[in-house]
Image (cartoon, rainbow, N blue to C red; front, top):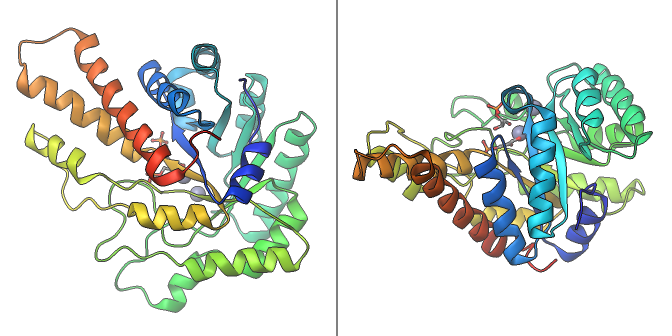
Length: 313
Ligand SMILES: O=C(CO)COP(=O)(O)O
Ligand SMILES: O=C[C@H](O)COP(=O)(O)O
Ligand SMILES: [Zn+2]
Ligand SMILES: [Zn+2]
């Protein structure tokens, strides 16, 4: 019933073999849709804000809207910085009351990623805020890239253990084949679950128990939303996401946080396009934003109940 960190959420999710949904937010309708769905299902939820969403809405606005949502629904919410690029942004959101931050140093050389992540961990932990970091490069494997080259971008299990030990992070985003956006796979969807299992086994062997793993780029890219967008003037071709059964499998393993933004964008756009397509005379924002809010609410409800398994937790 409050703004909380992800600590307890993740431990319960790990033991219960389910995952917490982490949904990107940037306006009131999206926040209401996610928290109302979660509230109805008695599910904890993570609301996450990217650097560009911070710029769009402002950290103070977002925190106050999230507080209003908590007041309305009574659920536990973690307010999280998504892909924090530097310590300065981390400081800004902690100042604004965020309870969790991600520092994404995955594009730096390994030792620099370790050093910068450690700096963020020291700063955040001193203020009661938890930290997610990223290791490995999140990008789909291109058909023409050889296995060895692809290997280099996936998270190395031994490095993951070293990274967690040296930085003291609370959770780790790994690269096992997902990618951001609506175009994740060219052919058949494939995730490296063996690698995920190895990462966990090595962490356990090193005495790091029940360590939460995070899956970015986990939207399933609902074909119905894509079709609606295209039916009403959109141009989204070759979109493909992570199948729900793979997300369920990840949730049953060490993955405690599943990130979804693209699915929300598509649901919102589909609903708005449909209103404009069917009712060209409509110009009341509450009509199309309300329809968008309804569609996002249904999406989140379905994810919580049928994919994440975080209902009544
Ligand atoms: O990982 C994400 C945000 O950090 C979102 O991923 P999607 O693009 O698959 O929704
Ligand atoms: O991980 C990326 C998220 O989808 C956020 O994207 P954004 O930077 O466009 O807000
Ligand atoms: Zn990244
Ligand atoms: Zn991400």
